[in-house]
Image 1 (tube, rainbow, N blue to C red):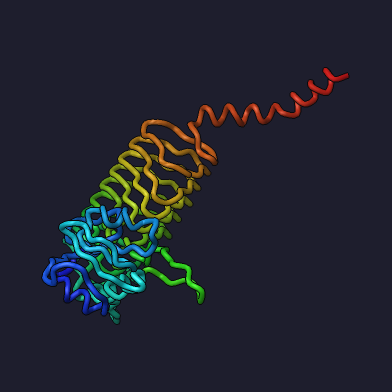
Image 2: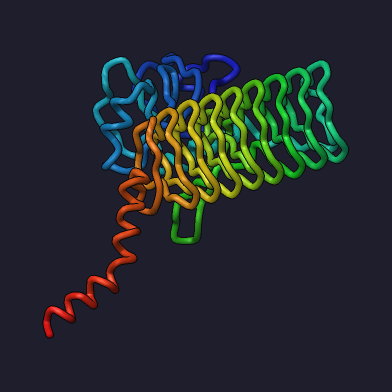
Length: 313
């Protein structure tokens, strides 16, 4: 998430009431999670295991819970609770905005786009030309939709990321300030849910078609011309490359990559990153031919046991 302007480091420190290490005028242009940071961004870290990763990332400002040696060309924000203060910054730069209309006055809607009754279009939404939003579609703030997009009834774009920190009193949510971006010629079925990024974008590539009742988690990037069948659940921070096919009831773990033109057969659990251009099946996931051979051999186990018993006699 980029800020509306570049802020000096000391002004950011004042917002969260913390100490800083570095030039008071060090430029801060945004805040992001570690997998999408760029120079000028703030990244937060609150566990020693991840200090080095954060300090050596592309981010040039590190919100950290211990005063450590500051890498050259970077700055630190020292906080007793970086998770809390990252949320404070999200609230400050992208606060929740109440709406009392079905279509916000700040929404931009392209020529030829049809919006059926009972849709909700939030603040600062951009919808391209010749789209169709069927009844009861909900589009949260800051969502971007391209041209020639079809969205069927009951679908929700832009709900919060499922991202929590466990504390003694319960679960503390990491607030979402990111967006959903839908590129041109995408089709989205009924009752789908696509969560916005925590700070970045959840992206659906041009020409991709999504069936009914599909969930896409935060910060996931789906490539161009993919096919995703019904009841599939895609976790957060997944990269699905171009022309991938996911058949019904596929589920994935977070933070993995599915290579271009891979085909994932129904009810498969994608538990790790996989190469493109192959067909996969099963949980744990394997290439489909190998998995189907294994299942065929499992069916032969009673026969094999019986033969062993006969040999013993």
